[in-house]
Amino acid sequence: MPVKIAVLKETRPNEKRVAMVPAVSDKLIKLGAEIHIQTGAGLAVKLPDTAFKNVAFTADPLELVRDADVVVSVQPPDAAVVNAMKPGSILICFVYAHKEIELTRLLRDRRITTFAMELVPRISRAQAMDALSSQATLAGYYAVLLGATNLARILPMMTTAVGSIRPARTLVMGLGVAGLQALATARRLGAMTEGYDVRPETKEQAESLGAKFVDTGVDARGAGGYARELTQEEKDKIASVVTKHIQQADIIITTAAIPGRPSPKLISKAQVDGMKAGSVIVDLAAEGGGNCEYTQPGETVQVGQVTIVGPLNVPSMLGEHASELYAKNQFNLIELFLKDKQIQLDWSDEIIAKTALTHDGKIVNEAAQKVVG
Image (cartoon, rainbow, N blue to C red; front, side, top):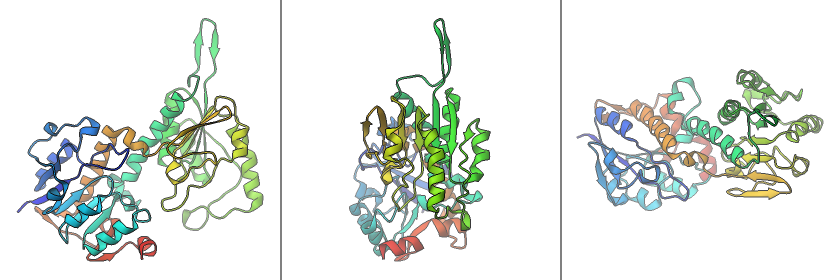
């Protein structure tokens, strides 16, 4: 019997992505899978059912998953869907167990093997499965566009018959995947770019994208490559340097998010109060409360003459390409265990072992065990 893969339609607010695209369903069929999709799953990204070939459609999600071997989605499914899944089947989606405690317990108790896409290890071999990075790349790109559309001026230098317009100054705080993409995008649009991160090793990456690196003279690296706790003197030194750049910027994009914890505050109310009239902050860490003390998650607010944008689920705003990248990430994960038209889970594989959240009636991720109990 072929392996049945069921694709759910997303039901959570503001979620437009879908976990399957035609190019990926074709590849899975070649691997020996049988694809069943919930009717209308791709409509939010203008992907009609007719775009899929050799695929079966089912309107009822409970019926869809009842005999599925693998269920895929972007956001975690409702409890009713999990209860309809057969014990021993596989669920692949973003979960974030610290936000989904009851659902994680249900997945454990239903003996569902759950692969949480946010747990894909950051190793070279897993790059093609790293959905956090693929989605963060799109978020970094779109953050610049959000900043530009909220700014009452243009980004590039422009020479006109009545004189020249100076380029806008863009500061990106947090130089991970999203931050580096934001720097690259702002540069392509003609802005002057600066990047800041507590990790000095990001200096070379920022400069390779044509940006200046804001060097505070403080090395915040600690054991294991993580940032260490700073002394008050070091915090004051960083603030004095960074404040100058914050208050010169036309657009600031912040990206410092920590799964399971509140977003660190990078911009204080006092720093915002001293910013240029008409400047814009785009806070990509709004899901965790924001990097700016004035951020209101999910809202665009005006503080004096400064606009602060706190978007939620930014990748979903680019649903077409976000779905394409995410579906490919999931395919590369499924390809690891779909062998000879059968599911073969190799628990000695670091990717399989570390991406797993629940298996065989247990929570197998250590961090989730502590949170869920």
